[in-house]
Image (cartoon, rainbow, N blue to C red; front, side, top):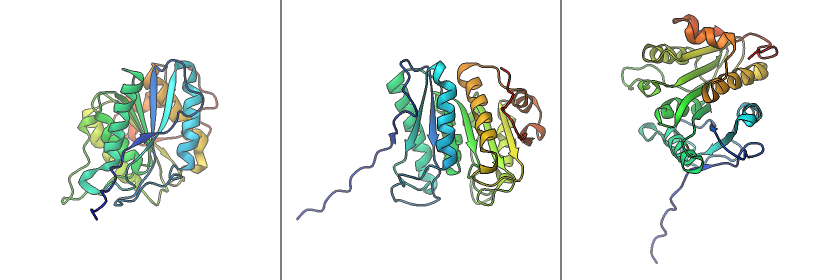
Length: 253
């Protein structure tokens, strides 16, 4: 009896978050977290509460503009070293957006290792912006190549990290942002003081910040003053911008 071939796994897009727009003029791809090394299939409930609630908020904010929001279904649970499976799947998803909707701008929004995938895949020609929440980034080590940043040239980038994150080191995302800022002025980073990895203590503020940033990047809306200041400020000021309690309650566009 012949040996049964291992089925080839493919990435996928979830159905649109909220009502599907009649005409799509921009897209958000939600990238959940993963593991450092794993060939297992991703869990169907892997997406964090943060990412699910954020997807709903972004879909609601962008609905009048024709925004389509999709979660990306990875082939594997792990990043898996040089294979960088999660980043490759994010690039596939951007290709799929172009195939479905045509030449529309794409914002990659990732949490944890999905944040690393969003940053790595940010060089895709359809991507014009990246939001990375509590991104998992490798240690600075002479034995490990530095995480690339040049692919982010010409993109608008937002990184958000809780200062009490015990899973992904906020100092590493600061160092990454500092390197990226040298080649791209459109990089900013907000610190959520005393919050942890899930950013659950300031979920509303983080959601408002991401929506404000996304609407500016994809559709040209005026962003809030804190985002303007963070993008314009030189390092380290614009990369250690504190996210104010109550951010978003009185945003004026």
